[in-house]
Length: 108
Image (tube, rainbow, N blue to C red):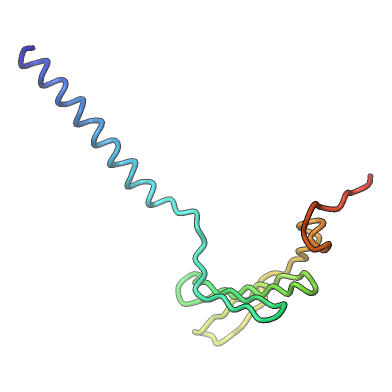
């Protein structure tokens, strides 16, 4: 093996190492997990809070008796609590009102 071949193999190995390090660091930038700050579960109500745009927080309230999900934004600067969205979970996840198991059949 001459010097040129050794240099080429060394550069090729270095390229593979650098590429793997770049891919490893890039995968840390893409985060697909949701981070809940606080979860409270009492009887049929579950509350989850999470950070949202600066100082604001979002609070999700799930009432499992009615199957409704509410999302509120708490803004400490203006001292307001705003209803952001509501959803009917029994309609979104058809068949969930039956208590689990297989989903109910929908007739056409």
